[in-house]
Image 1 (tube, rainbow, N blue to C red):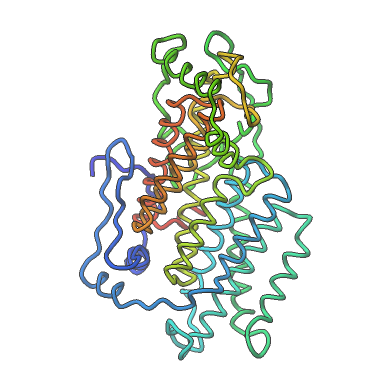
Image 2: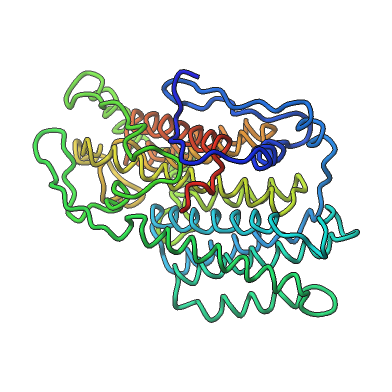
Length: 431
């Protein structure tokens, strides 16, 4: 490997490394990192014959009724209800998914009924299911109550109600799982309190030809200062400089946006509006969470595998926002409609610089991670990423080079997050 794309904080135990590689199986065959998008393409660790055999013989218990999926839907409802911006929602989804994975992973350190549990509802299976269900529910409620304090009472009531789902009332392992999940939830709240989200950006907005001309405060600016999960720094994958203002390349890109604005078709308008996923929606990362959950249920994955996939994807999405806003505030590039006021906008103009596209940064990261875990969905994921990017050009708010740079940045972050998880274990990022 010429260069690693993620900082190494803590070596994982061999047991944990094996588990993560096993959980990268979907259908037949081992899923490797694929196109990571890093400047120097790193190679993912390979599995040995024993790991391959274990994965091939693994069962798929509890294909439906996953706690992580139910609480994921709850988180999206709260994002819509509280009108979180796409960047703030990405942070929320990241905190929730990593907490869920930490909770599910922590249950593996505990024995059930005095012995390791089986995968199904046979000997020990019910107990393991209840242990994981209680842990994920409590971790989810703790994070969501932190993010949405006005909903705290209802969230904890939901945990109580979930304990009654199984036959015979609350299972003792559900109660024990609650304690494990609450501990992980507190750990994630401590991370959230120190992640830099509440630190105000105090930089200066530059002026001059080719510079963004929005009004302060810059929306989402604090993300450029935040602590990432897997990146070594917010600037690790900073996009290269955009075309010089008034250059031939710039003018050609601007003319493309203007031409679309002048001749926008009904289909282009539909894509621009439906793919906007702005404040008041489940947002862009919420869209990919819905996709991921559908894939998880379709493939019959268990709670641990489900939370692992969701955690890596949402951590990558959160880090992609951090990297994207680092680049935006480094270049402060002018929006197309600021360079040519005749460009019409069928959606609102975001109050932050143009380059690179935040929508594409998020889409690239999510698509990269999900393609790793679900290679059978690669074409579909690529289509979503491309259409999300085109929607911003159709809407008149981005140049094509904004979109391309955002996709490259996002895919690089996704690849780095996958590598960090494989080498270190994602939870090693959380003190």
